[in-house]
Image (cartoon, rainbow, N blue to C red; front, side, top):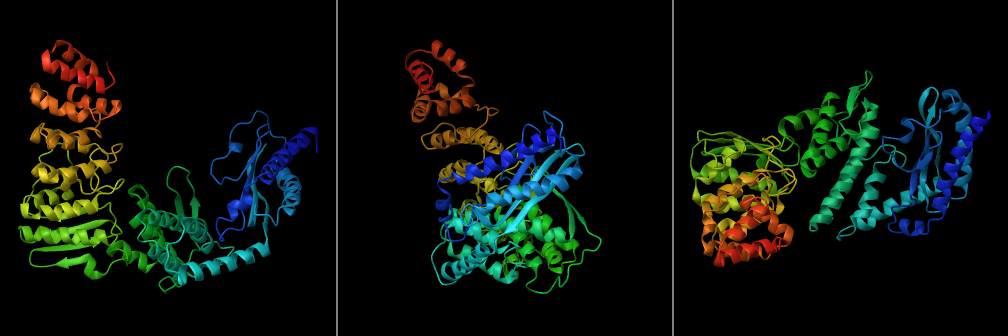
Length: 557
């Protein structure tokens, strides 16, 4: 080994020792592990990225790595030297450091030290050392079993999200359970959700951890048996089925693929809309392997709902639902209030039972009503609710539907990006324009709108202002809408504000806001505050005083 190679090896040793020194100096390691009995160590993976002059060690599994970038110096090693000379030396160094930490809470029952090395032949990735501590593994298995018996099987109390975070990983860890018991694992995940169903925010976090565990198992363990996977850090992975791939016992109960199907449904039902394509991808990959259940789910929906739940027909309307494609198919047989009442009740019932909040409607109807708001997508979903809004007796039911449907970061699925709207939007817009009775509904809706990704509430706000103008009842709702508006919105209410009474009412409402909020509300009415300053300078008497008050609350003296 020449001097440059010795220098490079010393650089690697220093990086490794520095990482271990840093961990040994941690004072909270034991406290971290003691948070839950489902943790016997902190680290199970560490990676060395070697670049001459810029070598580092970290515990991240991210796809990107520093060694792939240009180095300040050329690497002195060939691929063969890394594989046959450097790897054994580094493995011995890591093993010596681990021997001192085996019984500490720093190292998990399984520990993998990987390396990514710049060489004259290109990038080389390999496992430097992999080790399993059998005593820690035995202890962890005992603690998993004890937790399931005490906290899940024999308890009726909510559980901690941190416990679910670790349990979901452990149950799907092939080093702990060579082949997961699909039925038991699914039962455990369902039990966790049942115990935590009254705590909405916590339940969502439990589900995220379950989905994360299932997704990692599907992609890193199950699918690798049958597909060659090209992974992407930012786009979608590519899957090429292996020639010898055979899915045995594919339609028998309690097979590993049942966990994939369960995970796919969990993603579709509970993950944000932008993540649901992964659930559909899992189903398609299972179908390609010959799974009859996956094929049936893609055609008819999952097994999450009974046939009575997903199909309804009477003399007025026929409704079908497919939760896999988040689709309601509605055929209006007779155009009357009862048909739409039945369809809305059908949708509402399924939403309350967990049907995906982001969905679309495929409508067959002779009526073609749309809301009087320019810019909204003329979709079947829009048309369905506009048709229903024509029947005033259905308005209370539509409000009930809207309050159930409104969820931030969910969307009707039959609109493009610019015209996308949160579920419940069409009902809220129509009701808000029909009666002051629904102003509170509009305010609740606006409070949930994802205004970074939705623009259509601006279109509604403009029509709302034209419909009601400035009144004692409408102004608070109008201001709530303006607080979530965009710079493109321009209202045509300046003539109305020539009235001192109307202007006084607006000023009184805006004076309750902060400087930034006031400026946000004023912009759609007058544009930049410079214009309002000019108007105030030219005004006289009470009107001048009112305009000055507006400028003051906007932070302009």
